[in-house]
Image (cartoon, rainbow, N blue to C red; front, side, top):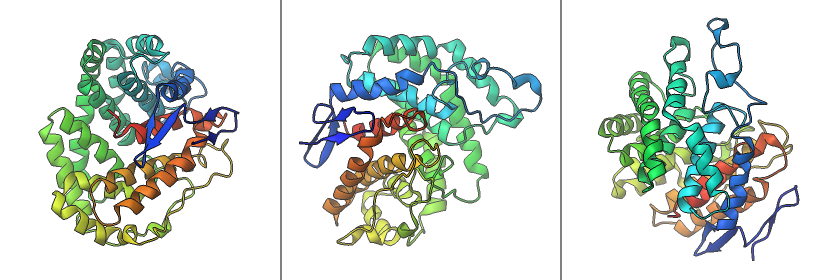
Length: 357
């Protein structure tokens, strides 16, 4: 029996999550519990952290006026993946208790008019790169979710969102054409993470041009990589693993027969009998930067699950590490502090439901 506790007194138990065949799955009760977190903040305007460039005083106003959709949950990208998460949960659990509420909010937020309003910011030269590439990637992931969901609401929302996802596809192609070096960091601008979400979107929408540019960039930047220093991780504020995100991207890019030999050169330590990887620890969950490490444990888990599905050697040890990181992260989804709660549920849902259909 799995009992995981969070500091607010809420209990994550077998009611919320099940584990069988070395895999966590989310129950309807768990989906409802996690959905409650973005529902608390998706329409909450403040506190808000802006990332826009003010070329004059025209944007010195309530952020909702220039972010008519993604103004909640502290910042633009957290709001974006909060919306994605609600769509994902509604698709997987259509009878969950908050289903009607979620549908109502999605209809209210993701209107064609609101999406056009969001696009205006990217028409400004100073803000063309706003949320590049992390926020872009989550919008593409949202569109992927809508396209793959056979539901009348999804069809309407997908049509509304399409101009923005088309814009980010175009901006991705332009950006990759100019980018001379990969971005190997543990936070938002990590290139491999953005490319993997964009690749999955391109596949779902038959966007062959975007796929071609992503593949070319990945081969150019990563194919000859060797000996990624896993022991250098984590950085103090990481929520993405530079080594593992790259490894999780490349099984999408390389032919299956080439992936494991590449991985053995890139991350040889994943093939040791004792993989030198420990979950990140957080000293203060009220610190918005330090709490990133709870997210790192989720993102490491989803990378390790993907990697394990595409190797034969040491597969069970890699799966074991994925589950160790998942178990370390789950107790802290609802810590009671807004700095983690405004975004961590999205990472939890992505990690747990990545193979749940």
